[in-house]
Amino acid sequence: MITGIAPTDATVTDAEMTEPVHHMLAARDLLPAEHFLDSRYPSAELIVGMKKNFGVTLVTPVLMNSSPQARAGAGFDRTAFTLDWDKRQATCPRGDTSTWWSPATLRGTKAIVIKFDKETCRPCPVRDQCTRSKTGGRTLSLQPRELQEVLDHARLQQGDEQWRAKYGTRAGIEGTIHQAVAVTGMRRARYLGLQKTHLEHVFSAVALNLIRLDAWWNGHPLDRTRVSHLARLDLSLAA
Image (cartoon, rainbow, N blue to C red; front, side, top):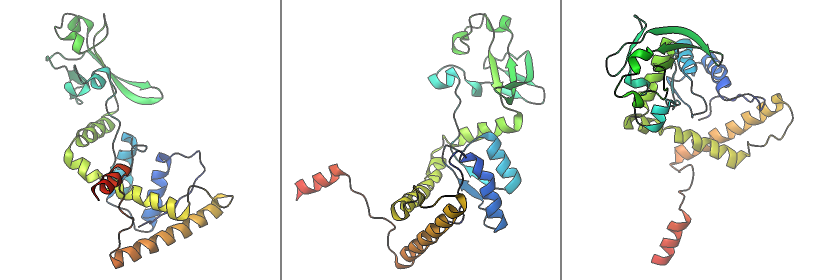
């Protein structure tokens, strides 16, 4: 069922609307315990913010570690290092500890930069699996503690089959979007201005809810089962 409509200018991103939509749902006492989002939304800040401000858990795939080691699936990526946030120290897979832990700003966002001494890394027998630097030591870049821990937990979760099965619920949302486009033509506004477009979307949502309620009450599927061209060809040959 469609419970909220919030049309915006085309330049407004999906992620920017997450908090306003939650405010709208909270005002109507319709906040969900979990909110299933696609991959355009997620960030550690958004996940933490929605949980703190609304008590809503965002179920969404987050971007995976983009370090060279993680992309290659070989060597020691960030998860191979043990972090001691209280002592402000990292330990590498071979047991050596970092010598530098400092807050920083990277591309306009707060971060923590961790460095290992070059004299420690230079003679290491697995150096090639850890860093591409020819002279310096290994460097790690993290988000602030709360955000980094949430991000690490989300990345760990989404590799689990149980999480993937749960996220399959998102397919129902995509089905609603498809139905809205097919039945009401929502991809093209019939009027100029947000207020008129909002009213159009409200009418469309009411119509879709009535269609879905009628299908539910009468036990009808919401859409016909699709058969691929190849499957249809196979059936015709079998006949």
